Amino acid sequence: MTEQDLAGRRAVVTGGASGIGLACAQEFASRGAHVVIADLNGDAAEEHADALGGEAWAVDLSDTGALDALTLEADILVNNAGIQRVSPIAEFDPDAFRAIQRIMLEAPFLLIRAALPGMYERGWGRVINISSVHGLRASPFKAAYVAAKHGLEGLSKVTALEGGPHGVTSNCINPGYVRTPLVEKQIADQAKVHGIPESEVVEKIMLTESAIKRLVDATEVASLAGWLASPHAAMVTGASYTMDGGWTSR
Image 1 (cartoon, rainbow, N blue to C red):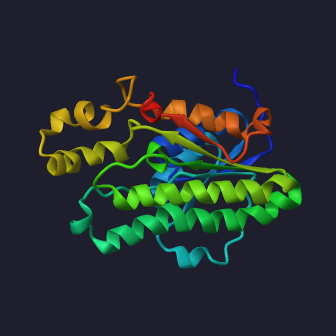
Image 2 (cartoon, one colour):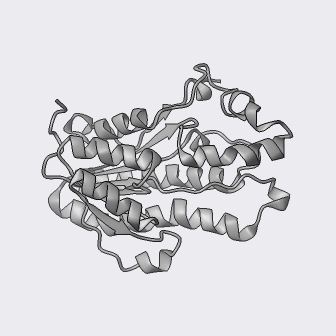
């Protein structure tokens, strides 16, 4: 049985109704936390929250103005929600670029800003930012995603420095390609911009830099998130944990 080392803690997970977010919500719930699944898809959030004995928060994180005055009660905050657009810079839709920055960088800032006062008051908090190997390395045709993830890395480190004296840690998890709906939706776009068949995208594009030739499983990411939220990681802050099959070793 999983250790109940998060009993009494409240965990808010954005993009929590599928993929990495859902795996994190399940991990935290298994360790005793009360989980809040925040997602644009309110019905899916409600379904999964009910299954975990938690609660749902239907929220559009692209509407960042609505988050300016938010107060967020969370002991654990997981900034996971994200979208992707694959396109050359010269053809990149400016509105799509702005939307990715809002959802994946501006919203995490506003959620951290909303959660920190409560964490400081309690003297304990965990901010876990689901970054990416693309927070540490660039790939062509992903200007908005790479820019947002690089920004998230910096935001996480500043949060670590400010939060440390108050018992709050902040870290990034940097997976390679994870088997999620977000990655599966990229395959057609990747095939188009690289001029290859869709059947070759995983091998020739997604796994070409990895020493271990498979996609990351969402539960592997969630397992690391669970450890980062636990008492065992109290001295871990300002770090970026790669889970990329060796990609960044090059």
